[in-house]
Length: 426
Image (cartoon, helix red, strand yellow):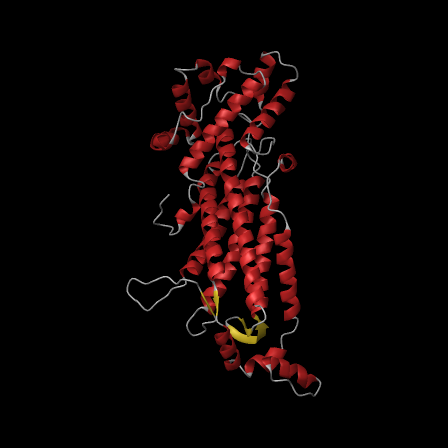
């Protein structure tokens, strides 16, 4: 996917594109049809593989036709019926029966979210690895601590890395809590699965409610999602993912801002591995990765807010407008978070640390950076030590705790979504 409006968008590949949504919606319809057949609601002759009936070449047509019904599921179902009918009339008759458009779209979005969450989770692990490497190589270097843009007191560079790690690990924990959650949306017209239950009853199947539960479990299992009751107007699942992704961009924005500040030529304590160029000033090596990561951190809150606003605006059993708002917001938030995650990996792995500039800047900030120390000594009528390297408080402890936490995180097995996770989250 190319996007001149968002440099770096290609790093997200096919994630949350129109093509991936179409493929996911088709998988949803195929899984539901297979479940209907398996549970005896639809006749065995209705079994068919729908997944090859549509493709990227149909995107323009479906996008155009989506406007008349307000969502892309309606023209997709019509197209699938049209194309499968010549070879299997039963499949054309039974596909989508018992569902509503929101079921197809929401479940497809859940399918599309899974690789986004998995990708970001993997990148966060890479960030922890890179930060641990920086901590072990440069964590004991004294530098100037700055507050509200001004020199404050001496710190270790390791305490700054520890702050970065704290944000990244916090984001990783929040994402891990959300990751097992993508669930099917199977509710029918008003969330009660009335049509599917009615079909089961008309087929004289015992316990239609049990049949409906089996249909949901079967479809979820085929799609690798969690079974769940309908969440048409309860959108906590989406806002939870949005909050997790937003927390990630918050953490990376903090890192990017520090790199942008400390890579200024007049400070020069950090530098990106490869600076970007200028169209008119050949001497420049712009910290482009940090700039683009900061861009994502600035954009993400408004996208997450749109999803929260949509959740708050839900009404009755199905909502108009609020539901429709979510799709593009989720796409942009998901893709941009993946892009920023991969840019942050490159930034942290290539970050250059200039010890000499840290030392020079710290010396230049004397005697001001030891003013607090002299004040403390004066309270007891004592002379203050004028060596900034000995006024570091609990910096060494902070660094050691960050190192231990990073190692503990990396010692965990890489997370995977199991059926047990899915049942819990459903």
